[in-house]
Image 1 (cartoon, rainbow, N blue to C red):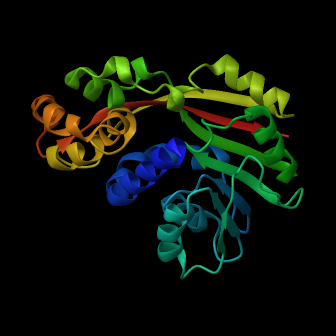
Image 2 (cartoon, rainbow, N blue to C red; image 1 turned 120 degrees about the vertical axis):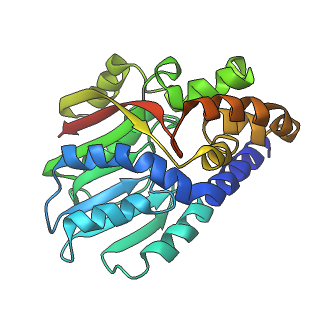
Image 3 (cartoon, rainbow, N blue to C red; image 1 turned 120 degrees about the horizontal axis):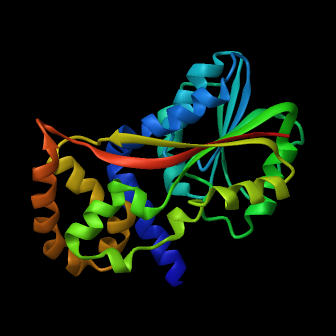
Length: 263
């Protein structure tokens, strides 16, 4: 029951601020799409498609003759994604756990994910499942967070609020390139490329950034599970963000790996 409550809080928080997180995370997902070099007419699986921004970006690349399948475990996220993508016949959605979802072997040119792969219970089995779905010429591509210490986007608000010791390390479980390589090799992938990428990202000004950081990300998880903390950490967060504001925009550095592999 506690796990269900935690997941519900997570889904509700992301649903409230997804237009802002889309703005923040979009450049990082686009790095993966560029690395995959998607072609018109391609079939793509979006793992952990969330509220649907990446589905729309993928369908732009594969065009009217392509196909994009989004899979996510969250009914809340898929409801938003359905509304956003309903005018595109090329997009279909599946409510399922991506690590065990059963789709036809050899049916996709690419498997893509924007931060949807870091919490698998059995990552080797999950990626082996994706490997089976790819065509012989298919590619896997995803982005994942590097270490918390490398990611100003989460580190700065945690340090500003004095919450660093309470940070959940799960989102950073793929921060070791050797670990990623081991998993992908174990799942049958080859030609593995793991490229560090750093980019200042933004969801807007001070107010927008506070809205996001108090709901999602490392600090957001702590605050939404202990609502008494919000009024305590908000002024501390505001102060440091005002200092970092460049004109009307707050930019914080995101550090990720852009990972690609073939079968």
